[in-house]
Image (cartoon, rainbow, N blue to C red; front, side, top):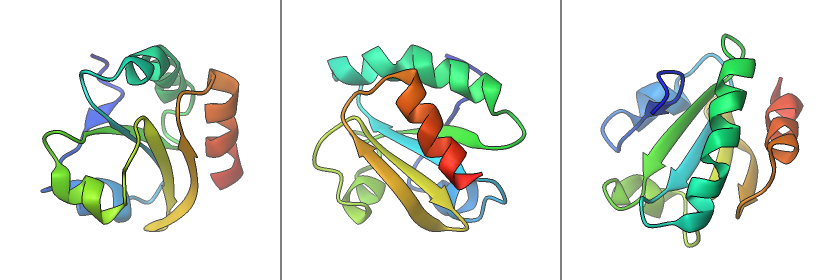
Length: 108
């Protein structure tokens, strides 16, 4: 696991995501999800690329059901980009690093 990607749960979601001064890309995932594992290396790289400008956090849907329900996560991976405490954009399903970077770039 990278130290650049923080694992966030129901208890600290508001503080880490909604109250963040920088855009936050939230990866709703689960350990058993193959496509989630496929995009993990791209997220690791992007966390380094955008360090200091945007954050990437992971929310395990099996352990944090309240957050998953609040944001209507029905399929994973589901990525939500938050800016100023609001959903700015979303991506459902595994996509490449370039598409993930575009999500972040649009919020910067």
